[in-house]
Length: 297
Image 1: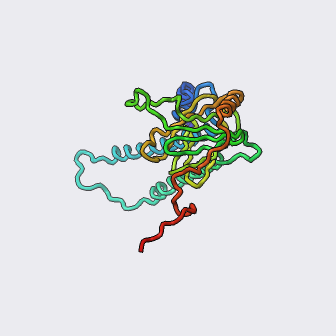
Image 2: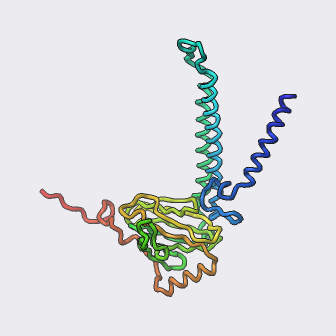
Image 3: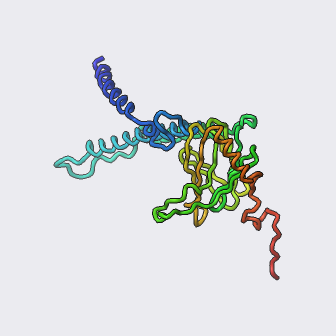
């Protein structure tokens, strides 16, 4: 009875301390210092909180494992240190079955748990919208070293050029106004078809906490709902050649009216139709129908 009372009195200050610490945390801190979260505003996409939840929970579990491991290690170092006057080797123990079962079973449970929760969240994130649920269809085409965007339903497109360093190029700054920009309406069900015109690229919007590889000859898909207006930086996350670091773009999440105005501006500029991967640099690869070179005799 007395033991339970001590535990209760110990738990009260610990819980109060944790409540005080957590109450003072910002949204970014509560979400594991990940980008895409602003105090008092919704997350960038409908998947952001799920991703941050997996991230934060994983770190909590790993920190607990680390504390226990280091605690036991330090305790063993102190408790079994050589005392003054002791000589020779300590008692040698070959096996301790309970401990060996413990450090075999517990890591196995942790690995299986991480796998199960990751698979669950990945399945939810990768789930595509039903065809009649898609509000905006985009086709993103990667190329060395820029991006083209097709607005499929509106039958317009935007052509991207490689990022150019500004006058302070030594510091790695680029001309933001010239970057390829994908415009999306807030609150819409967006599906992006990802294609590559030459080599493997990766479509990464940093604040969306989400990226996906793009392979020549294969189409991957991203389905999400942008939930907060703003401009978000994007980049290629797969080493794709000499100017990989300059393969940048922006995503602007705007209101429906602003989105329609952007589509009208593309149409007024004559950018009507759809771009394709037709003019890629892989025309001579096996399986493309290109004529094969005859072997010399």
